[in-house]
Structures are given as C-alpha cells and as structure tokens.
Image (cartoon, rainbow over all chains, first blue to last red):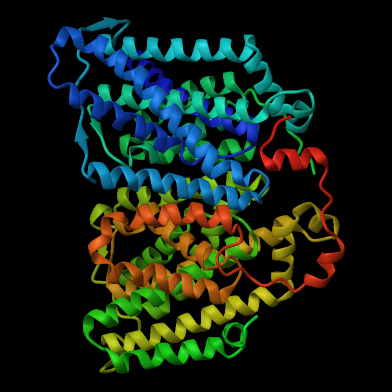
Length: 297
Length: 339
C-alpha cells in the first residue's frame, strides 16, 4: 500500500514537472503546445549526447556531472522552446485556433522525426545510471536516486512558484493570462514575457527528460508522446492554467495511475489514465483548483 | 490572370473534374497492373477514403481529430471479429460496423464536444491510444498479433471479389461513392451549418443552429467513413494488428486533409494521393520523410493557414463590405510589438 503511494508520487512528480509547462503556456496564450512532450524527449537526448561525449565517469562524480548536465540541458531545451514559439507560434497568434493546433502537431512531428533522423530510430541506453541504497520506510522500498530526483523536482517547482508569485515577471505572466490587451496597455512587454514563459516551461520539461533518462536508463524518440498526454491529463485534473493545480494534478494522476494499475493490471495503466481524463473533462472540466472560465467573444 | 492560368484554374474548378479523376483511376490498371502497383493503388484509394472522412470533421466543421485512425480500427476489428465468428463474408458485417462506429463516435464526441475545441484534439489523441492499447490487451482482438485470415469481402459461388484487380475496382467504386457523398454532404443544409460553426460558433448558435448536435453529426459521419475504410482495409490485407493503428497514421491522414486544403474535397483527394504515393516514389529518403512532413505542416500553417488549396468561399462579395475593424492594440499585438 505505501509502496503504491510512493511509486505514484514518484511518477507523479515527473508528470507535474511536465504539466507545469503545458499549464503555463495554456494559461498565458491559450495554446495547447503538443510539442511539449517532445521537448521532454529532446532534453533526454541532449543530456544523452553530453554524457556520452564526456566518456566514462567514475561513479562518485556521476551525481555532480548529472547536475551540470541537467542545467545545461534545461538551458538548451528552454532555448528550443523559445525558438519554437518565435517561428511557429508567434506568427499565428491571431490565426484561427485550428491552424495553431495543427502547427503544434507539425512542430511535435518535426521534433520527433528530427531526433530520429539524427540519433536513429532505435532506443538508446543512458550512459549514467543512478543507483543507490534502498531503504525501507513503512513497508515501501525507497531508493536514494528516487529521493534525489524528487528533491530536484520539488526544488524546481517551489522556485517556479516563488518566481511567479513574487517577481515582477511573474506578476506580468499572471496579468497577461487575465487580459493580454490590458497588460499591453499597462506597459507590459507581452512578447518578452511569453518568450520567458516558453523558456521556463521547456526548461522544466527538459529537466524531467534528463532525470527520467538517468533513472529509467532508456530513451527513444517517441518517449515524449505518451508522457505529453499524461502531463496534459495532469494539467486538466489540477485545472489547466493554474500553476499549483498542475503540480497537484501531476501527483494526483500519479497516485490514481498507481492504484489503477494495481487494480486492473499494468497493461491497462494508460487506458485508465485516459478514462480519468475523459471523466474529468465531462464532470469537472475546470479541474480541482480551476475557476470557471467564461469564454469571451 | 494569363490565359493559360485561367484555363488551368477553370479546369480545376470544373464540375467534371471528379468524373475525370474517377475515369483515370479506373483506367490506371491498364497502364500498370503488377501486383505491387495494384497493391499501392488500392492502399492509396483507401487512404483517400480516410481523408474524405476526416475532411468532414476537420475541414467542414473545424474540429481537430488527432485519433482518427481509431475509427478505422473500430471498423476493421468489428468486421474482422464478426465475420470470423459467424463465418460471413465481410460485406454482411456492415450493419455491425455501422453500429459500432456510430457508438464510438458518440462515446468520444458526446462528452468532449461541449468543451473548447482544443480539448477535443487532445482527447481524440488519447482515444486513439486507448483503442490501440485495448486491441493490444484484449483476447477477442487477438492481442498484439491481431486478427488474420479475415474472410473475403463478398463471394458468389466461384467468383470472388478478391483477385487484386477486381478488388481494386470494387475499392475504387466504393471510395468514389463515399468521396462524392461527402462532397455532396458539404453542400447540404447540414454542411452549411458545419461551415458556419467552423467560422463562428457563437454566431451560429445565435442564429439558431444547435451547434452541439451539428458537431456531433460531423463527428459521427467522420466515424462512419473511417469505419468503412477500415472494412476495406481489413479486406485488402486480410490481417490486422494494433501496430497498424498508431498515431503516425492519424497524423498522416490529418496532413492529407490540411495540405490538400481543408474543406475542399478535390484538394483533400489530391493531398491524400500525394501523401500515400509520395513515400513509394521516395523510398531512399524515407528517414527524412516524416521530418519533411512535419516542417511542411508548420510552414503551410504559417503561410497558408487555410491549406494549400482551400475551399473557395462563395460569399466573397458580401465579405468585402465588412472588413473586420482592427484596433490599434490588435494591430500592435499582431505585429508582435509591445509598445
């Protein structure tokens, strides 16, 4: 039982990290960034390339090296997110919603098959594998890397939350999500704030990519597809556009999935989370923490 | 417009274009009838049918469906399972396929069509995956290895519709019927309602169109088209497995619709033929093929957000009088300036 809860929370913290990017972008420009899951994949591959080029590392150094790689990959995926926003989404900011959605699908496709063309379509195994002591807490087997990764995820999420609540850029983000034109008239540099949003969201997804590569040890060019869907589900559960909601939604989805898998069997895990998504959209489309949004004409 | 260009565009707008295309499709086996080319052409025809169905949902009604291949899977699996269980030719499974695809359309459409269209997009994406994973997990669908030995479409005594050339002709006629039907549907009262909903859902609602019902109808029609394409597909390959119905396939059908020109049946047919035949011609470049498709999709949307060959609006004259009035702030936002 505690094992299931722990596993759920662990997987959930990955979902939460990715869901944050979805939710931030959606909150600000009402765009479903389908390519977000693929940014996660891109992060995993950037980390892979860097770790491979470093060659064999002694075990003691691997955690430190991993942290450096994590930061560099975050910067790189953040940059990729900014480029995507600039060249694919910004020209379409006033276009019909359908055109923007199709562009997002196109970006996702480009990232997937671009990585596949460069790195090959077969799965790669990560050169660094996090291993550590396993200890028992209340009957759950918890390993040191799991604790470490969850701590990193928590630090990232808390600093993001502080950034959004306390800094002026964060205030600008919240203001744009309420009223873009009003913010523009109040002297907010809307484009630069949107660029920053994409940078932060993509960097968090990239961090999740490196972390999952190092933990699970295997990456491939389609790895972002399913987790992108799950992260969206998490964002919807928490209330899309809501930052704390995305974190909560990720953890809730992780828990639900862990329980669902233990009841219905592991092969139904993904089906179960989509059913949760559809149920939420039917019964409470605003999510747990979301407010009712009226669509303005 | 130069005389040549005028002639070409006249030909493209000609109402006989569809019949010319049908004649070309029927005559094609006279040029080349090797098993390989018949196989490629039959597959392309089935793909055209899929694109025609998705065009109803995406092109006419403006709803993005990213799991369209799931309806093809529902159709193919239903006909495969029913025909094997009762030892029937595939033709007689059509009522079951109809019921199942309509049901699938309702299950996925009913909860999501009330929401914003972007939710629909991602839910259909999830639905596509659910269908594939379910087919992979269940025993009745044959698990990962799928169903094989699917009976023929129709048998009259000794005469079977399954020699490749005969099957090609049957496919062409069925696909032509469905393409014609969806083109006619686009011009019907319902079709006009779909386009109204696509252009402005609130205005449509205000003018008394039951937008939810109309969207659900688009969704169900799309589902039925996909289901029948699935029957043809099962009959063509005589074996189906979950691996056939991955997201990539949904994305390819979507590309055919988008690049061909959303809402324009002729463009969609051309798009479907290009998307399905091009890879056969560019075998060497297969690694970069999907990368190119992805880039093309982005570039097409940035420069021609209505598709390469969009439906020609009939309301040109009236639109001119009513230019949307842009405020200064709107203009600044669209120019990408901030101050």
